[in-house]
Image (cartoon, rainbow, N blue to C red):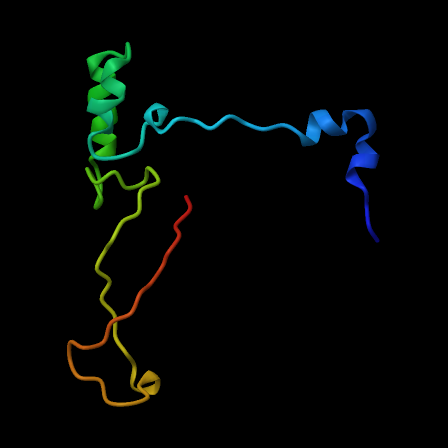
Length: 106
Protein backbone atom coordinates (compact mmCIF):
# COMPACT_ATOMS: atom_id res chain seq x y z
CA UNK A 1 0.00 0.00 0.00
CA UNK A 2 1.44 3.36 -1.01
CA UNK A 3 0.49 6.51 0.88
CA UNK A 4 0.80 9.94 -0.68
CA UNK A 5 1.77 12.12 2.29
CA UNK A 6 1.51 15.37 0.33
CA UNK A 7 -2.03 14.53 -0.66
CA UNK A 8 -2.92 13.67 2.95
CA UNK A 9 -1.53 16.99 4.21
CA UNK A 10 -3.33 18.96 1.54
CA UNK A 11 -2.80 22.72 1.66
CA UNK A 12 -0.36 22.39 4.59
CA UNK A 13 2.00 20.04 2.72
CA UNK A 14 4.48 22.70 1.58
CA UNK A 15 4.55 24.37 5.00
CA UNK A 16 5.08 21.10 6.91
CA UNK A 17 7.36 19.24 4.52
CA UNK A 18 9.37 22.23 3.36
CA UNK A 19 10.57 23.17 6.86
CA UNK A 20 14.34 23.56 7.01
CA UNK A 21 16.08 24.18 10.32
CA UNK A 22 19.00 26.57 10.10
CA UNK A 23 22.35 25.11 11.09
CA UNK A 24 23.65 25.87 14.55
CA UNK A 25 27.10 27.38 14.35
CA UNK A 26 29.69 25.30 16.20
CA UNK A 27 30.86 28.38 18.12
CA UNK A 28 27.44 28.43 19.81
CA UNK A 29 27.84 24.89 21.19
CA UNK A 30 29.20 24.28 24.67
CA UNK A 31 30.81 20.86 24.41
CA UNK A 32 31.47 18.83 27.55
CA UNK A 33 34.90 18.40 29.02
CA UNK A 34 36.81 18.56 32.29
CA UNK A 35 36.85 22.39 32.11
CA UNK A 36 33.09 22.74 31.52
CA UNK A 37 32.43 24.66 34.76
CA UNK A 38 35.25 27.16 34.21
CA UNK A 39 34.55 27.58 30.50
CA UNK A 40 30.74 27.70 30.46
CA UNK A 41 29.13 27.90 33.88
CA UNK A 42 31.47 30.45 35.48
CA UNK A 43 30.15 33.22 33.21
CA UNK A 44 26.61 32.76 34.55
CA UNK A 45 25.07 34.49 37.55
CA UNK A 46 25.20 31.36 39.72
CA UNK A 47 26.69 31.80 43.18
CA UNK A 48 30.22 30.44 43.79
CA UNK A 49 28.84 27.79 46.15
CA UNK A 50 26.62 26.40 43.38
CA UNK A 51 29.55 26.31 40.94
CA UNK A 52 31.77 24.64 43.54
CA UNK A 53 29.15 21.95 44.24
CA UNK A 54 28.53 21.36 40.53
CA UNK A 55 32.28 20.97 39.95
CA UNK A 56 32.43 18.56 42.89
CA UNK A 57 29.69 16.43 41.33
CA UNK A 58 31.48 16.37 37.96
CA UNK A 59 34.82 15.46 39.61
CA UNK A 60 33.45 12.64 41.75
CA UNK A 61 33.66 8.95 40.89
CA UNK A 62 35.99 6.78 38.87
CA UNK A 63 35.80 8.96 35.79
CA UNK A 64 35.78 12.22 37.73
CA UNK A 65 37.26 15.21 35.95
CA UNK A 66 37.28 13.51 32.55
CA UNK A 67 34.10 14.98 31.12
CA UNK A 68 32.55 11.50 31.20
CA UNK A 69 28.84 11.33 31.66
CA UNK A 70 28.49 14.43 29.54
CA UNK A 71 28.30 12.71 26.16
CA UNK A 72 32.01 12.34 25.52
CA UNK A 73 33.57 9.07 24.40
CA UNK A 74 35.81 7.38 26.92
CA UNK A 75 38.57 4.82 26.44
CA UNK A 76 38.99 2.41 29.34
CA UNK A 77 41.11 -0.69 29.78
CA UNK A 78 39.02 -3.82 30.31
CA UNK A 79 40.63 -7.02 31.57
CA UNK A 80 39.12 -10.39 30.78
CA UNK A 81 39.86 -14.05 30.35
CA UNK A 82 39.65 -16.21 27.23
CA UNK A 83 38.16 -19.53 28.29
CA UNK A 84 39.59 -22.79 26.95
CA UNK A 85 36.28 -23.52 25.20
CA UNK A 86 36.61 -20.22 23.30
CA UNK A 87 40.18 -20.86 22.25
CA UNK A 88 40.28 -21.96 18.61
CA UNK A 89 44.05 -22.02 18.39
CA UNK A 90 47.22 -21.04 20.20
CA UNK A 91 47.24 -17.50 21.57
CA UNK A 92 50.49 -16.23 23.00
CA UNK A 93 50.39 -14.10 26.13
CA UNK A 94 50.00 -10.43 25.32
CA UNK A 95 49.06 -10.80 21.66
CA UNK A 96 45.27 -10.96 21.85
CA UNK A 97 43.37 -7.70 21.30
CA UNK A 98 39.73 -6.93 20.69
CA UNK A 99 37.30 -4.03 20.91
CA UNK A 100 34.27 -3.76 23.13
CA UNK A 101 31.65 -1.07 22.61
CA UNK A 102 29.37 -0.43 25.56
CA UNK A 103 26.55 2.04 25.68
CA UNK A 104 25.54 2.81 29.23
CA UNK A 105 22.24 4.55 29.77
CA UNK A 106 21.24 5.71 33.22
